[in-house]
Image (cartoon, rainbow over all chains, first blue to last red):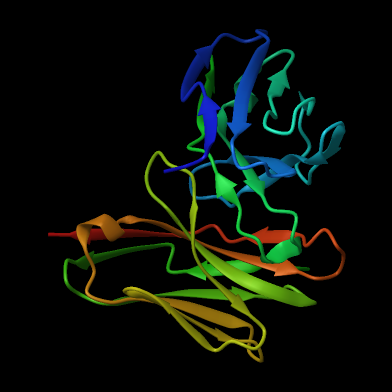
Length: 114
Length: 114
């Protein structure tokens, strides 16, 4: 069972709304990530954090922002949602032991912007 | 350009049959390769990791191979079960920096029919 939790699981909202996707983990991992996943496509890194008060943008250009005030919490915010933001958003965490540590994923938030 | 290519894109097999999924990569310098299983509506879960010096590694009915010379990996599933129906994602990590950047394949969608 996953020790990383995402809410909500599904979200349908109208264009222009502000939304926050929640992600929490109970494993004490310093590293956390947000990925975007579309059907049949590879995961794209949109934000990552190596610890409290540390956040960086990933490879995929995104209009979202993140914060890391507590180790266990890594929320993602869209100030003004657009239909192009419709996608699956996956949060993950990993141990700080380099690239040999696996990513632990949440079950995702499926966002639909109408 | 660092890339990860998986084949086939999708595969349908009968329960009890074996199958092999392929992953070719151009990532350099290579650090490790990991296979993830992603059930529908869930986040990916790590199955196994292959490092440069490893040729074969088994995890129950899953056996992964790595040929670092040809930059190819395979995931063999023996005596398939209905629960094996999922997307299998190949992820390669480089060691060009302490970041351990990850490169994702698009996955192979496996369907096991009774």
